[in-house]
Length: 551
Image 1 (cartoon, rainbow, N blue to C red):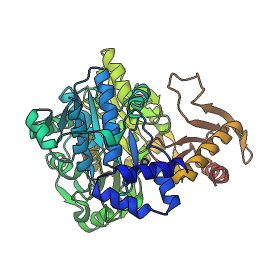
Image 2: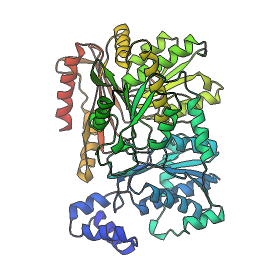
Image 3: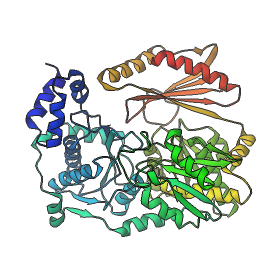
Image 4: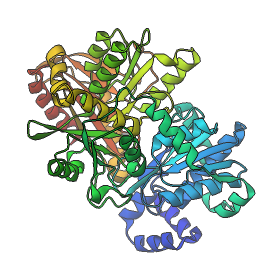
């Protein structure tokens, strides 16, 4: 009998939740489905847990959430931690999982502060910091499809946990039998003072901190906004409407929370199809720009009305535009500190290096994942240099101005994008005009992100084998173009960065590609860069090479 089948039989005996009992019954006799649901425990790392909602050790359900929460509680008690902040987004069962997390925490004597309603991930980071909690839990699967949910863990600084903390928490999680856990009801914990629902003053304080990052008003601009049925639905319109916009239009079908995401199966502002309804509204209303945020409102995408067409900006382009806007306005107003710092990730455009040089700013490149940007802000804080942090961004549509949170924040990004578009509109320019000016000054950088999915037990094994084989057989050239340098972030000593499962290939003609497995999904991601028009031909050769090794 396989391990998966043993786990399935155990769950059939132990599960008491009626909905999950029905799901177990439906799996009966389907060996492949049982294998996928039980072949392993959901992986827990710096990105927490993420997976399909459903029954099984490899899925997100009340038992896997309870197991994770109990393990986290044990870790907290070992470190004499006493309070946790908990929030959630619009995904299916997010509110249920948040409540279950609070109940488990309270059962261990840890006080749980819970947001009164769904809220953006950056608000959870703010909650942790403002309430001086020891840790935070955010129930979200970010921009994943509706079938997914997840569980992200934050430290006392409001930053996603480090590798060391994740490993220590996992050790505690592995000791937990979810079927042996007992707890009282959430309402009873409220009465006992072991759970607390936060009030509106916290949100008001968060908004105040967001507005403090503003450099202009957005008067003269019309904006279409879509939260993609997510957690930005309430707070971002509040911020934008208070920013003196001429008009704010909402995409009605996507304006309210709905974890089924009925109009966009992939509620990700990185994906053009997710913006279709927003673009229709942009054309219909004659507004200037479309702003879209993902379900937990930490990522933001922008589309621009330009010369009668609608142009979608990439995450790299939005980040470069915001960096240039913030640095230039701070410099012109005398608000730019000495030795400012611009932070990006290693897979984010090198065009940011040129922007930093233009304003005599230091550029810092970190591993992929916004937690590293959050950790870097903490490093600056420890040195008394936190005011040097001007802006941080990653190509996957994540941005942060200010240090009031330690994660990417689509709320502040939406505000800055709208005021930036208004600023250039007064000069007779669109954001497309402005990015073209930057390209004219520094050269055009072209980027492409490719993803290769490896679902289920078989896919997981295949993904691990491909990466191992690649390391054992590193290429020296791609279709005749010599590879100048290969950097393996598992073994490199050139950069002062933690070890990471990332390979970077620099080609002789200036092109580049970076390969890494996703930390939260069964994917391998490839980031391709061409630093010239001629380099676009190289990208095709790189894509052909990747197709061969990942097929």
